[in-house]
Image 1 (cartoon, rainbow, N blue to C red):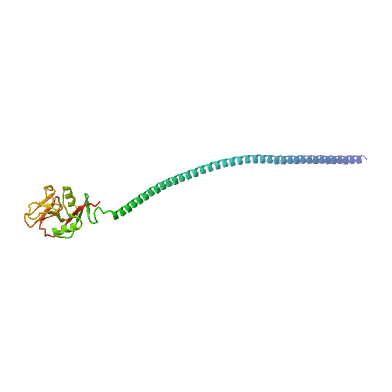
Image 2: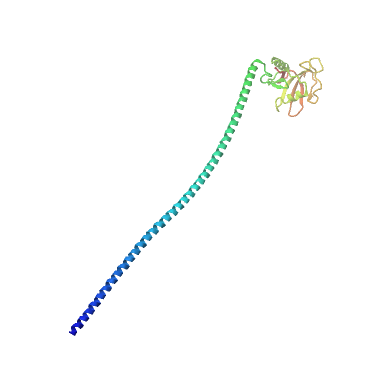
Length: 275
């Protein structure tokens, strides 16, 4: 009987221990579940906080980025406006300079055109005057005929045909003139250079009438000593040498020489100017 009680007591103790172990296990399990649940809740809270924080940071970042972008865009816009204004100002200056250059060219062309028009008018006036003179020349006589040389309002013609003194005078008279009569040293100097630097030799209107001692001009005047400084006289006293020629070399003064009137020489004719 006692053994049975002991065995029961032992079994009862064992069962009691098992029961305590089971309760402890259940308590540990509940605690573990609670801890796990708390940990899960904490994780969810942490995730929610993380998401909220990220959203907040993203919003702040977006706002800051937007503001920064706006500032940058504003700066770019301001800079663009400045660049545009600078380019516009530069283009305006270039256009202004081009306009000024074109204005100057226009003024130069205008002045040149005015000058050319004035020259054209002057040429037209000269042409009209020449036409009038041409018309008048058909009505009025020429001052000196063609081939004659005008010197101090007198006309001179140096003939190249060689004739006697008398033939030469008649030839001059056929031209409404006569052999030259030299009245001054100035006229002598002008006649001396009539044919340039070449040798000039011709009859002049000076002769000695038959039976006289002095020398006469064809106009009836007497030879005087007026040309003693301008003429080198080379007269021969032979009675056959009664007409005078004039000739020159390269040096002054001119030389006069008496020859036979039958000598054949060119002649110098003279007459007044026809106005």
